[in-house]
Image (cartoon, rainbow over all chains, first blue to last red; front, side, top):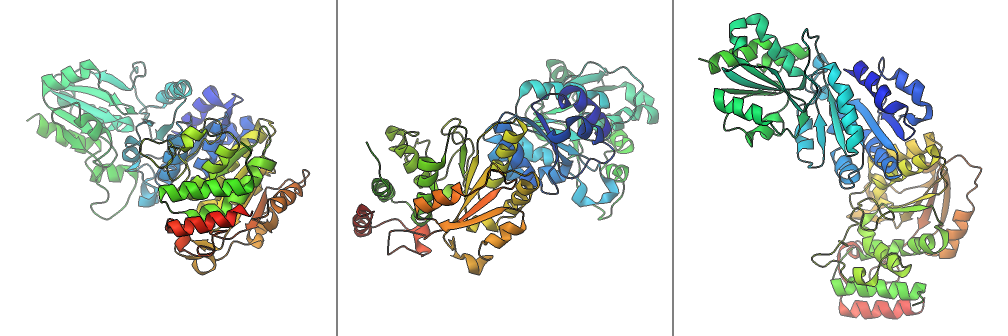
Length: 295
Length: 257
């Protein structure tokens, strides 16, 4: 999603005088146009993420609107104290952009995976995490960030092509009606859910599918009614068990089956699809869980 | 009321004695640096960050003396319900102290961000950052040092309170002394001065050439527990409160300042 992000950022922020963009020495084949447009307001802050977060807080204190970009685990895990003390306590409008949420960096290995980022930010009550599911989500999310003027996290993943007309962006979107089971998927994992149609169209027809793109997530009334009615609920996320979508929905739903990232059970590594498969988060795993749920 | 160096030291001793608190040594090593900045150097548009947040009592006393902090507020220090805890909280004085400080290593990055923002917005005003020598153990300090030099932040002036002692050892025995050479190697203007001579601190700061495109660091040679003979250059001064006898002895000493 880094190219669609760059295009949306250019459209919403790059031409604003107060905008500054800091990168932790990353952004090849994605941020070049932002750099060209923003000139001295585009800053390569080097491989020094803690400094970069605190610098961005200093800039925000003086009236600028910073975006801070790096690979998701580098910019979230290494900098928690800087985010809390310098950005969070002061509620400054700093946006942290993490590329490659979940297993996004695949075979690059576990240092490059972000499975705990949303849990960290869920514990910071002022922080909203945005998890776009489709490339088209990034523009409205940036528009919200611009309007909200508060600490934000944008977790970029990998969106797949889709062949249907997307409903207007909201934090929790209803993508498909069904009365057999209610499915909530966080961000790009929605594509694995939609893939069930190809594997088992009869089962797919029974699904009431919801796409969640922001945390904290507050379910709309219609989603709660669906969950109560089907009484078969599946929550899916590319994140550790605690602190992500499952934890947010546990306060709103009576019970559900939870598919989440369990780390590296086989102690082997592969591409993103390999890890989704191992964790039952790919289309086949989701289909299996749904099949059991609907027995 | 007219404040003098002597009355400010006296008020500081009274504050820490009545609250039975520690961090006295770290406050006494930085107090003259704070006085130099707040009473002689800081101009309209300048901002100050005390990165060694454990010296908050010294900052509170100086801010009270120059009228930024009310006496009523200072009286609440260290009590339940106060907005003045032992380490600096965020935004306790709007537009004056924006950031919390107490976990070491953040202040230089924050100051660099503020200085860079001033440059990008073509605003005048220096950013003064005060750090401790022990704080330079933190890796983030050196990330910020490289950042400030690379971005030619000549509106950033850092004072390091070099009292040679940190929380559990002498600086030279822990991760090594902070030296001008280290900062010079990072591309900074470097100066050294007597951190207990307000005149020397001010004079040294005035030497900074406006034509320079580098950030500046001033290594202020100080004494931990300054003016309290029983505390000077001791680790104990980092932790222990004053006894009544020590307090009275201290009052006698600072009267002659």
